[in-house]
Image 1 (cartoon, helix red, strand yellow):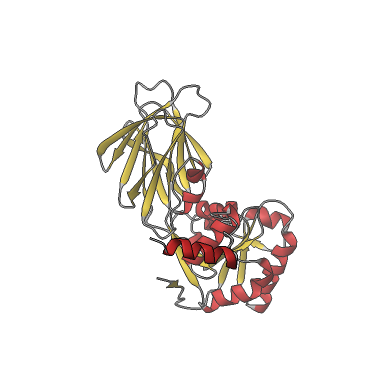
Image 2: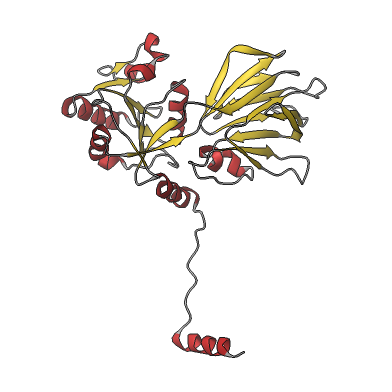
Length: 323
């Protein structure tokens, strides 16, 4: 079922983001001018971008932790990495995100830049569909107590791995408080459906439609041929613990960033976050997903089998009619 965006009042404040580096400054200026002059929007950028483009206004340090309180929607100029960056910027609720494909891969960036005026106007008018993408909430624990300031969110995945250690990861897994298994592997990936086409896919996990309410559990190079990926419902709470008898510590990263050390006895509790990410769909979430699979991953791409010639077809039909 397609979910439509509906504004309670006309949006006023937009966060305009671009990927790192100066290459997209001309496009940034073009979109900012359109938003401010033609659509009468208040445009905000990141502080680092303000240093590159001084005539634009950056949000303040005080506003940084409260972006969801005043930003109505986000416009991204870049690739998939910029979408992951948005997930890190917004700690709780995430406003709708309209992303233009100006990066490398573009699995999540569906819109071509040349039509940005029409697409942004459709967003402002509420004439767009949205896809609610699940995110993970991760909390680190030490001696059974949550570590202050060690709470993270992830749009794609959380990865627990052995880092530079020559030894296998030894991880104890608990699902909803019950012991599940011991992971002996290079590591473990806990992924969302959005992340199912990222690191988890490379490690042998299944591809999953972004609207399926599930959590993917994918081992990294397990030392057991029978240890296959598992799909859990999105309601589960998973605890990963480094046992005291483990030969080494482990490391955790969240969408490839904010890498954290897990000492012996430490644990990380992962659950589905109550704040999903709303991305604007070009057609609908199913059509967009299959388009990305074909465009970015060449999924099931092969030449179509050629038909028989008329003579061969007649011969085949005759042979099949003989009992």
